[in-house]
Length: 341
Image (cartoon, one colour):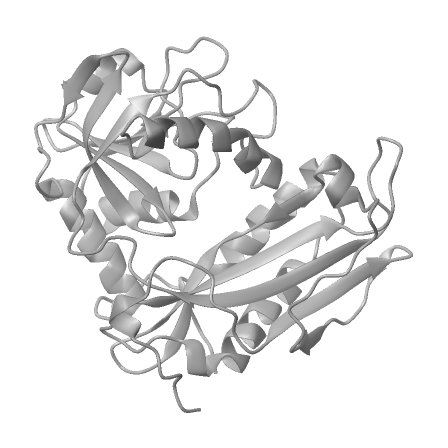
């Protein structure tokens, strides 16, 4: 399939309508077979459960063109599992994990012309999502649901290199204790919008959220997990029941241990410890790792030794290794790379 005539190297991180998407419906206790369709419009009742009570969840992943020309998806089975967990928590029917992976692969294949070429710096972002679709006026789960997958080509998260970010400690809580912080629910992101708009207005790139119970421990940002490097080269990542289990973060932890031979600690991280770390990064699908150079807590500045000019050396190694695995220049662990045939 001939590639679309896009300026691949200058794409932004935004939505571009592509040719095909997948739609499946849940009714009378069962999922239908689903279809690939041209239609990008969603038609639902004004009283649909998603509109009244925010009963929706989603996933995000990417497809790439590797060095040898194959189109691959990075660990889609992990996204399928995480979405299943989100659905259970929100009292939504689980879309079967094998069918989830199959639907994602079909949409990527049908939109092959939109998959950016190797070396362009661009990728194909994949967005599976589900929502309650039938009318619900009393507070209860919907009876009918729609599962959809669309894709859009996106540019690199950073233009001109990964410059370290300045972030702030937020006065807001991202999630409640024993709440929904550990699932990828749309409501979590709606809750974070005011906080991120406020941070941007104040000149910060992101928020650092502390634990909602004691506000003494580091949790995550609105859309990424934290990764810290100690001065003796150890990788430390916060552990909490109210943060999203990032697939990128879990992959980086494996890379740190098995590829780079680094010691890794997944544990509670006190905010008081942050000043003693050598490097800090935010990890997620969009950028793999975004370096952090400065953290501001109500006027008090914590400047990481890695500085504001470039990634710290350990985070750079983690970034290079994981992106090498994704792009096919470094051999991947078994099962990490799903080849779209």
